[in-house]
Image: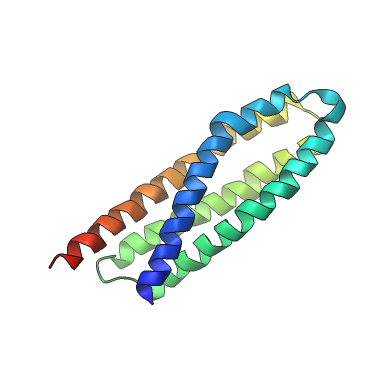
Length: 149
């Protein structure tokens, strides 16, 4: 069971890391080019549609991260599992405290300050997910190495 939990955690973390880099480098910067007449509609649709993609992945990542504290492959130390959880808490905190408020402003129409703050503060999530990817890939290497023995 611990291996299935780990695999779900690995998959969701890697998917979210790829997605957050796309959002950071391409999607959020392009908000500035949508144009004012339709921006509020675009921003609301973006938030609604994006939630259908990211919320299930983030939820599975969170749940499996917590589960790995309880039931983890033997090569993953408790300390490393806690680091994984801390990174997930940072991601969820940055989402709720930094990203969502900017999206709420943008839902009412384009605001250059909110868009720029969204791009700037999204680096917190981008870095945290990148660190999580490094962590879960390191865990993967340790699991593969343990299988050789």
